[in-house]
Amino acid sequence: MPHYVRADIPGGTFFFTVALLERRRRLLVKNIGTLREAFRGVRHRHPVTIDAIVILPDHLHCVWTLPAGDADFSSRWRPIKAAFARGIAAGERLSERRQPA
Image (cartoon, rainbow, N blue to C red; front, side, top):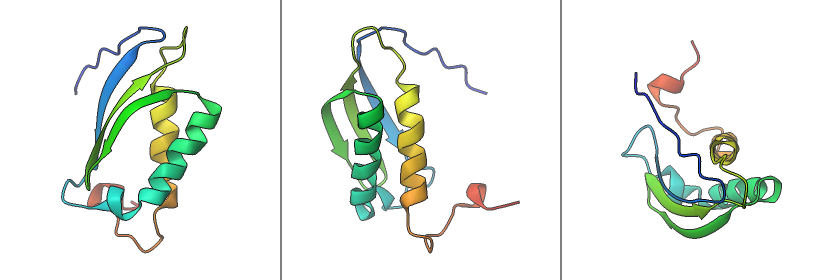
């Protein structure tokens, strides 16, 4: 199991790459409106400056600057991912790892 060491730099600028579980899917560009709304909703509750972002079919790259005194980027990523997953069309195929038991 990986051991992650999270950066703890309040007000820092961070580079992120977030990828789909199944890298051959095109969900990010196919559902760009849903992704945009997920970001918008989270930014309203947890401010962050998005300095740069690149959306590709199966992953995204972005550079964020957090507010002064705030180093908690995971409280932003978690709801972005959850909102995007909830917003995907009900008929979209789930990966094997996401199938109900």
